[in-house]
Image (cartoon, rainbow, N blue to C red):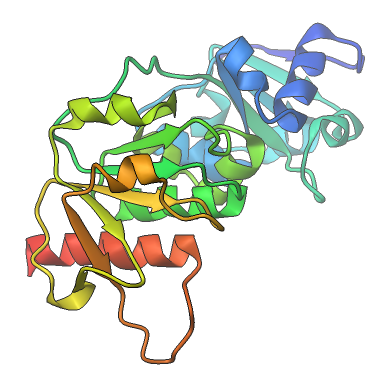
Length: 257
């Protein structure tokens, strides 16, 4: 078993790095690693066959941890609960976390079920869509410039471990989607077939647009199909995460029905 290293100074370089990763939405882009705080995210990473570089525990959490968590990383660090509270971005700090090196994102992978995020701003919406994408069999999520950072702490928490099931690429332009070689589908409130009546292609790429502005003209021009979601209750529109869940489930149901 890896011998645990105890750190008691808040000025330790590792703890300074963890504070930045936990509290800065884009720090992961510079460091190439992400801080996964809490038992659920750590177990989700291991369940996908991934291993962290560093495991950090408070002393009480270390005493209660399973062997799988204790042995997950080549480096184990123990810190007092007060130092974990200084790192944490949560109201109730967790007792453990992993530092995990992000996989390389080499660009768009053609021919696989894809969700495109067009300038979505809300971290909760982005994380929720990642969960739906993973649940309904989409392998890739592509984020255009202006979309909330996919590995930001809030998006990671909202994703609830779905990040580890997906290929994620961000910072793209609309032209980068030309290599997808897939039919592109968008939702519209005023044109296209009703979703529950439409014949949906597979694989495909669903585009989810900005919460206020919707899908950009550049992506609308690339659309091979438009669909409408029936709203008999008469509301003007749906939250983008709710609309995404409905559309992605419809794609999944069309494949297994």
